[in-house]
Length: 130
Image 1 (cartoon, rainbow, N blue to C red):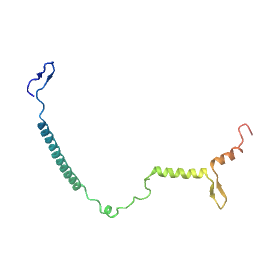
Image 2: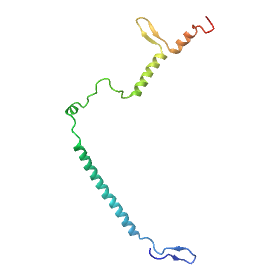
Image 3: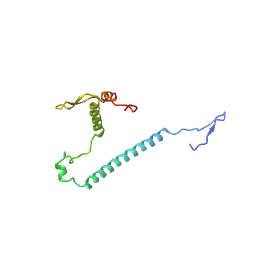
Image 4: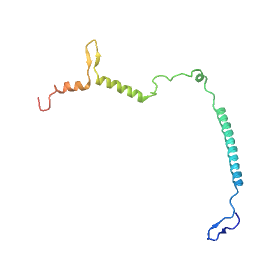
């Protein structure tokens, strides 16, 4: 590449030689080899660091090892609060939209809210009436 560009008769300039393919392959091989060596070195370093971290951790208390399935005392936090909320809403909707017993012995029932509003709406006085 140290040669001066040549002219072909029409004023177009070009280089007389190209890059050698073997030197490009050698450079690529050296880069791949270096990347492999660096990767292996990093794996070794990380394994050493993990081993040091485990040695630095204190061992778990004897009670922890003995009671693996131990639960915290009541009351516990909800694990699935949205599922609990949906179940509550479904139970409330069931009471509001269907017939059912409140107290079967005394004969108290509940009716759907829409039916109750229609029954009560006709019996209430309006503002103009006294």
